[in-house]
Length: 465
Image 1 (tube, rainbow, N blue to C red):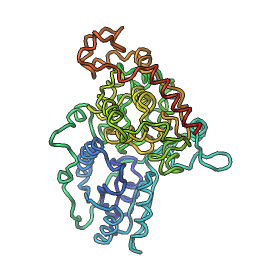
Image 2 (cartoon, rainbow, N blue to C red):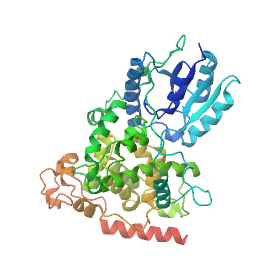
Image 3 (cartoon, rainbow, N blue to C red):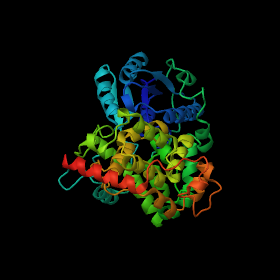
Image 4 (cartoon, rainbow, N blue to C red):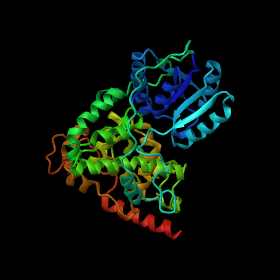
């Protein structure tokens, strides 16, 4: 029997269109491995909601491997050291992995290559995006910093590669190495179990991802307008499935490529945005921690660590108690389901950094902990876009008006679902209910006009400094 081939799984929890698994299965017996490495990512270790999704996705994938008379080996610790030791233990000839572009995973790939014995190699594959970062470049061969020209270049390079089939056969090694028990990792909350809303809202795993894509194929035509209407929620909800690699952008593209609607064209640009975000973090690995633009951030931001009133403002935003119904509905949806409708996600983020003048990194970390689709590239690029600090970003002086946004995009039904205190308000007043109809619902934490003037003043001062 040929030597075993280890498949290092990370955010690529699928059997079909899985380049690392595809190539390993052609080379010999396959040992799929997932290493829970909590220390490596530091403040971007898996958040609470991500751990819930990871548990269920690994559980689903384990059943899929089981149908092929295979299994996933679960280990915990420093990924390069764990994998190198496992390769030595099993006599593996190669470790196959799909490339990941978060800085901690790029470092881990380098460390793993150095840690392996000379009779084992590391083979990296491209498989989680439409095209690998660096494919779309400027005329001088440099990576793009701005989304719009990047998107145009990507559209000209399409179609992407062909899909890879699920392996028909997975040969097992002569003996299986020991594995942790998934339950022992305690990824699921118990005391209290705050994840019931996530379980009710989502189905997990590769099959669920394709069921969602099948549904979306009939709905994508309405995406161009529907994506902005939270009460209707004409969105794909594919983001966590894409993030965890239960389905690939290549599969989505080939499933929808014959659509001729404006909705598909708009949705395709959203998929390209995911590729763009990886392009950014490849150029700026600390993008989730450091602003790109040069402001005097001590002047621009109010620091929650500097006083209890600012800390209270942050907590009110986190708990959905700001007095702005659309903001609070979004933050409560985030806590309950691990996800926010895309239009409301922007409104909530803008409110934190511009109405409350709280550093975008506090928002990035809260989203990171609460989102089931928490993605280092997407999350940091989106936060730096809304805060005006990014390499390609909205101007800080463009301040979203949440009350106007709520009425314009007909968020009444959405608010009733997530802010039940206001369920009896009419459509005319629910976006900005008067004091006598608020009941136990809080007053506005700050008036919109006051917040706007304060933000613009702080912005001017930060630039003058």
